[in-house]
View 1 (cartoon, rainbow, N blue to C red):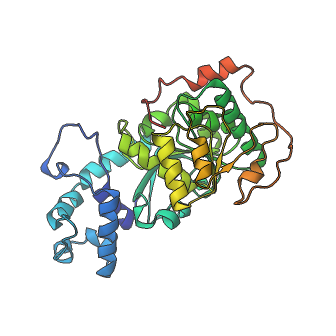
View 2: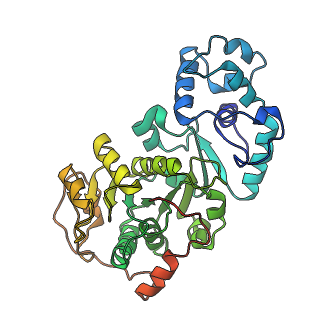
View 3: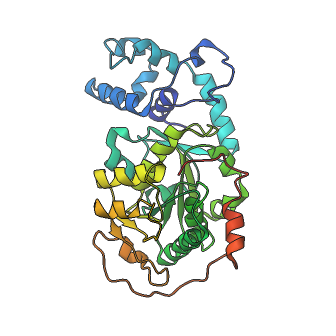
Length: 351
């Protein structure tokens, strides 16, 4: 895995190279990498100095960093992080052996939608496996509860199959429940899938669940955190933002009045990243109607009449019946449910 000087400096400053709880080998490892917000401020400061991250690898970097006082961001911390070259080399070798790659905001493959919509709040580094070209494919974000009822899971799986037939990528979070239903529905119909994970990318990359899509080039799994990171609610919340910003439109299957699905959909409505469609539900405890009251739009409730093309435009159009593929890969609801609730390969995750 060859990194440009720009990418190398970015990774040194923003990434962990071992589990946060791992034993510290030397003093240069005992320093916290820059957060996305800190990196955004530091990158802006560098630009104002007429410099780039690549300039941080020069021998005279201490001179460049003189006067770098950005909201508790000390030059000494930057210098410590830059000394982690050996740890970076070991981590890159391990990640490459596992089939992982990474892209930074300075790389051409980095998702354009993330940079355009989040600007300096976009993650400085994305780890991934699978077809990197799908990062800029756009598509339909499908989100919902990890404890969804079987009817919602079957509806969601068929949304994935319909999207595949329409040539539209599914963007979701890889969590148990609605996320996996949408992604598996698309993958088993040879459709494009973009999975944005909040943790355990390395484990997911070797999971049999995603092997078909990863091997045939129709799936990409990405994460903004260390590939072996454990679950974190904060990472899950940030992941939800990335799901919307990587897509062209979004569909909420079911949401409670709190939690990751609710917060992600609410933020999307506030920021107006993409149009938000909402599946009708009879659950009076759900927040689905709240999203419509705040600017979302009801989607077609009958899966047979749901038109994926209609979801990809900013204004609703009359639904029409389109040719339906079979519910690929599943003959019964019990088979689908058994697959969806096999969580042996992933940590439990908020959705």
